[in-house]
Image 1: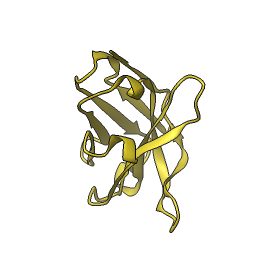
Image 2: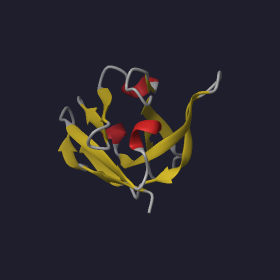
Image 3: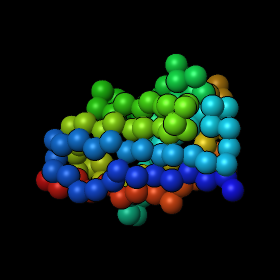
Image 4: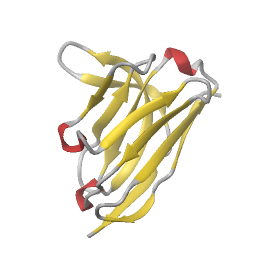
Length: 125
């Protein structure tokens, strides 16, 4: 069964850090671009970051540039999202997903079909 599972969310004060992990199973992880998305209550889902199969290519949405870092370990079948200097506006459910297209020529991080259940990140002010 193809699946990904997120972990590492929680409650943190503004300015703090969290590291999210997403471990995949049932697929050849090294063949997939991977990404992180988030959705806050009442808002649309947005892409946060994605990483190419090799780990060399990365993308970050403007609101997290300089604060978040995506990485992957193709031996452990895991993609990470290190989140530093967290802000209350980072509060959301965070999802890991496979990426069908890293860059379409217009958009980055077009999601594929494999999604996790999400992990909640809450940043208090």
